[in-house]
Amino acid sequence: DTEVTQTPKHLVMGMTNKKSLKCEQHMGHRAMYWYKQKAKKPPELMFVYSYEKLSINESVPSRFSPECPNSSLLNLHLHALQPEDSALYLCASSQESRNLGGETQYFGPGTRLLVL
Amino acid sequence: QKEVEQNSGPLSVPEGAIASLNCTYSDRGSQSFFWYRQYSGKSPELIMFIYSNGDKEDGRFTAQLNKASQYVSLLIRDSQPSDSATYLCAVNLGGATNKLIFGTGTLLAVQP
Image (cartoon, rainbow over all chains, first blue to last red; front, top):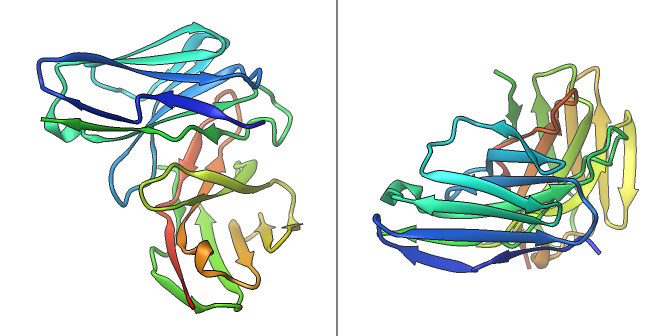
């Protein structure tokens, strides 16, 4: 089973709202990722959690705040977003393994976010 | 700047033909290579990964890796209209971080 789930599927929010995106996996993976993808562009890495600790922040604005409550869950808290933040937000997970192939990332279905 | 390059396409092939998708990468230290398929409006779906020089086959898909030429390709045999999608090449740089660098993707259109 290589399933990563994300909720909600769609989200519309105003620039003053606070909302959260959720991601869950039950594959025993110890690394989890947030990506942002704009139309006709490849996914852009935002954050990486490894063993529930933030290991990479790709200079993401502070209006995006990640959280990893446990090894199966990953949240992305959103506050005071801008219209240009509208995009598909993807969560992925992988084994935290140095064995080649163990680092394979599996993506969830994404949350399509529209900021008005 | 570590880069992964793909022809954006569209690559148009007739149904039943072989589709050949190509990808080059700049970092010689790259260790593993991935092909993802992404349908419009959907998330990337893993097709294959490869980390040794040569070919790796899985059903109608064959990934080819040539580290000396810094080149990875994906062949799709007996292409079907359902294969029409964007194909993303991704490269893992290895080392302490498990960071993927994505190419811009190639749009494949299989004509019935």
